[in-house]
Length: 418
Image (cartoon, rainbow, N blue to C red; front, side):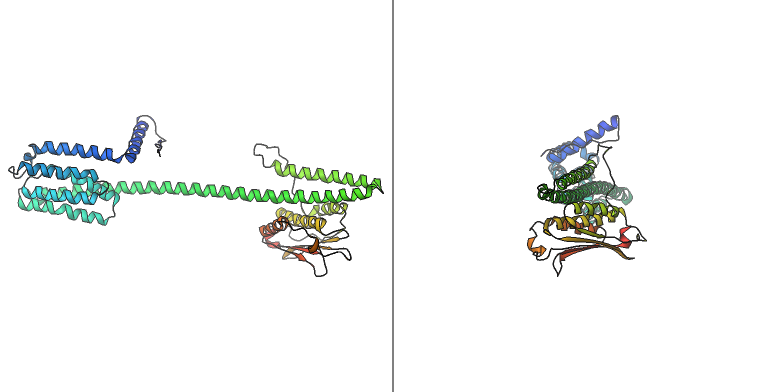
């Protein structure tokens, strides 16, 4: 799998090209770490062997150290660097042993300062306690050299070297902190992106559910009314052509109303259509028109509304909930109650809640509604319950003991206006 090199932003000129080259070098090193490790090891090995050819005597305390030992120690101080990133503590331990022999013999090879490389990687990738182990490995060679060849004071021999090692460790800690901070920012950005995508999906699912519920209420109710009108017109055509014409006119009116509602609902889905029709949603004032349409479809409906308006008016959303529940209940009555049935819609207001009771009673001698009800998926009842739950309301529905069916909606008054 190939990795895309991140392109730095917010910089211009030479700095941008330098960052781009650095990013490419890091990406290449991540794919082929052995190239950089091998090149660095080879560089320091050649430098150490060149110094072992004779230059080491310039800093040696005992120039008589055997040459073979100097070459062996030079290789011991450079070859392990190849594994410094994968096993820095083990590399430092091997190098510390070579430095101990170097200082104890008096060679004092300058390659001993290469211990700073594995020390940096220990601070970069290991817990803080590993630094204590590292300094425990670095200190014995310094003390041994200072004790065996006391040509310099401790302040000149031991302390400056320890300070150099401490600065390298602090550099590794600083780089590690920056990397951890960057990784935390990247992880946070990724989690925020995931959360944003989840919110978008949830919002889309909620919107699909809302649209499906509206489509069900609009199409289901109007088609039921049209079906009732068509059946009545067919029976009236033979005896009373005028009644058939009235039924056809009502079918046309209902169809146009349904089409207008669908256009309004679908029009708001077009983001680029700023002129979409946004007619107001039905309210309690539209219950009379709803009941009139159902009566025209052949179902006698008695509407009982409170004489006085409520002290605390319902919010538009709560009014739409009451309207849709009444609409769905009357639609189900048209579909399942059978001929001769009658319906009653009662709306009451109390200081605590708003209640809508929709009941239907079958004709004398007719079977109970649950016997003639078609077995469906119950999307209408589910939609009514979802609407009620949006306003912390409750919905109860079921057969009546004397026959018929009842739907009871309750919306808390205090929540409906919030």
